[in-house]
Length: 435
Ligand code: PLP
Image 1 (cartoon, rainbow, N blue to C red):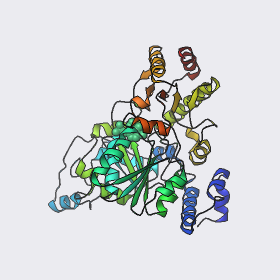
Image 2: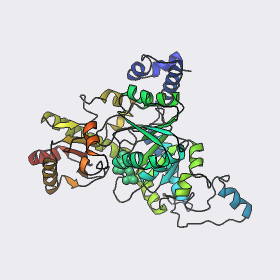
Image 3: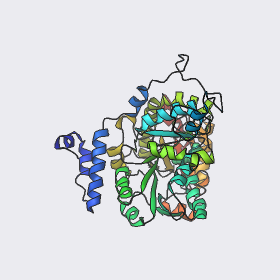
Image 4: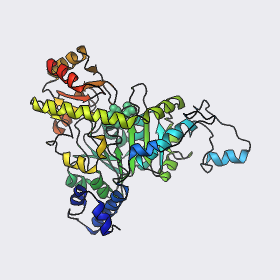
């Protein structure tokens, strides 16, 4: 339990949010205390330091771990092979779809960054999401999800899972009462993105964890938009998933994903009889995981620069009277929640959205921006150059138009992934001339 001394260590903002709030039930109170305790004891956690502190090098003394160039591995004794096959021989490798050394190095680094017991690497972000959900849910179960999620995730939840009799409720994840009201006896997972794609709503992870744990469900958080900025597991999430295609890799040269969670869950995922990661088989090529591991080591610097540039532009756009969404702006509805739960030195992230009203206007502006070399008219995000796309007509086009309207996704909404520009004031001048 939390001691009085520990409470004094808690920043003012967390005290007001997590201590003075009214608890609705006794078990609410219990979980609130648990989360408070987790937050207090993990407050000093720094994801960048966790990566810096890792010591991983190659078997010949190379400063980078050697890249695995084998799909299968030899054994001196048949019995050890059998034990490895059944997951009882940690540190031994059998077959690369199961585990391979390169993916293990990257998984260990991600587990360190997320402060989870373990992690698993997948060949895409979608594989991380789908394998995790299918591992957690059986036919007859129920999932609560934010209605604003990445379009691919939305389509999987909306069109695919019902085929297997898994029920899904779509809610406004920022309305905690709505989330609570959606809970059913068979609820197994509450699913959200820490910062939602593309509307940039910020999830109140500690409160969602309380709701999930109160009903015996797991909280699963897609942290793709905000690695290092949020440490969802420290805030109470059970499972953190990533599209590493985005900020974590940061080079737009590959597609990859990751799942960070308890050792038990990762073992379940890789179980040869029942594990979705093992049986569906979305393994990442070791060459790729080795290059992502190297890029992970510069993530902290990149996130700070993405955030700094995005905050500058968001403020300038606001001054110009544009309809801009960015969690770092005080007017953003979840600005306070972001501030309370973030790892402060990494800022508010590199993504902002501007509503230009109509699709035609949005296309005209994006084409001008590309012509003037501000960035590229392309989907995806987390790249070193600025990328922009019209979400409703690209990465969220899986969401039916009426639902887009209902959730406030305008046809002219442009999502910007702000790059690492060294002189963002100069970039702003060019953008202004295009507008
Ligand atoms: N999660 C979010 C928030 C995304 O934006 C995306 C892709 O855009 C994904 C998951 C899917 O990742 P991937 O394209 O690596 O499969």
